[in-house]
Image (cartoon, rainbow over all chains, first blue to last red):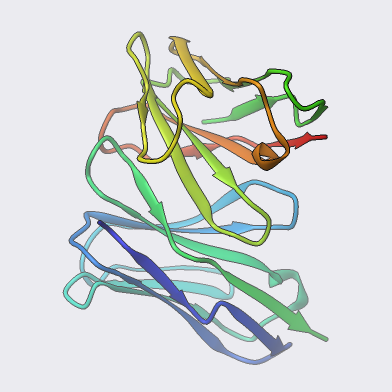
Length: 111
Length: 116
């Protein structure tokens, strides 16, 4: 059974600081996604990572994938309050596009 | 492009009643649709996968007779929660993909179900 774990589960950080969220998964997968969820809302797609060594950046967020280590990271640079949300990684098992979601990381950026 | 809608966005019902939630792909044909459930402060859990014109595939532990899924067309899937109880209260999110195995999933805005 595929397991996807994120850490930390909760992160409180000051504006302007950098931090990294980690996503570990237990079996081979051909793609990994990062999503953002605001309270009471659905998911907003951030990144899809398709191959080992893939790196994608959008604004203050950068995601990377190491398929050998079964690890993805979401790096936050110079955090701003607007980044406060819950971030999920999700792994595709290759079977009918099924996604297994990580535990989620609730990010709180304080002024 | 790739917009998915859900209706209703919120529903409150009495225990024992049935509730139908619709998921529509507005600008593409969805071969596969997925239904997720999310309890407060928890992750998304896949309930079932539905392919147009065939029976849904349910995840382990999900009662297929309680959560009826119909995917009658390439743009519409419905989830009916039958004889709802308070423990069914949750945030239900659907997603849709164009192809069976490789396409990105596009998520709907979710439906908040409260069973009194």
